[in-house]
Image 1 (tube, rainbow, N blue to C red):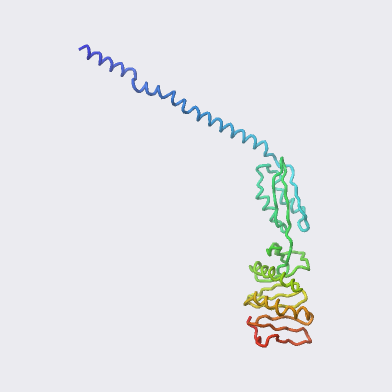
Image 2: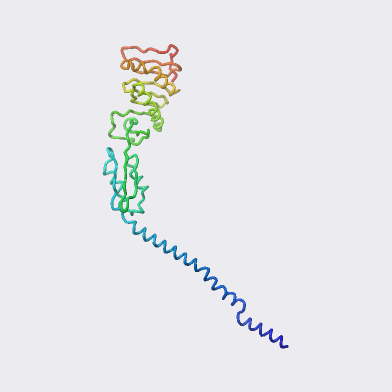
Length: 275
């Protein structure tokens, strides 16, 4: 009887005190605080660092005070550069979009490359390189030394430039033959004045002395080699008499003489040109 009362009293005390749950939660609270305290400290440090970086960036990102432009200009006018730079003058030193500024400068007709860089503390330096015109395309286009058409319609064409002609979209192909042929002709004492590709795909070179070199549509490189090896000595010695050299034959060439001379064949087997 006494034992039963003790058990009942113990159960009542356990139930009334909250027993197991209270003891477990009470034990977890210090553990939870100790676990999260380093996390809170780390978050605070990160937040402080971010605020410091933001403050420093804001302090440094002041409006650009000066834009320095360097380069040797013959075709690019200073006013064109000022117009391209103007929209960026109020930008921040750190936030200014240098790629957009570079693209804006390189959109100017005669600008080949533009190098743009920040200069501490509040300036931007721009270095401009102009295109070098190496040939004219058609009547009024201009190509650079890489054979790229950089200006389709120019009001001023240097008269000494060679002329390249071809259907639209063949600029690179025509420029390639010019760049390949020019030094080889120069090596035998001849200067190339014009390279033309007609709509049918036939090639013709014109030398500075007016002599036409007809290469046709087939085996163009082999025919050019034949001209350099076999026909160029004749042209070099009698350039005032020669009107054209036709290499559109399988293994020979013919010469068209300026009046009053007549046209003669230089290969007995070459009677009709191939194309």
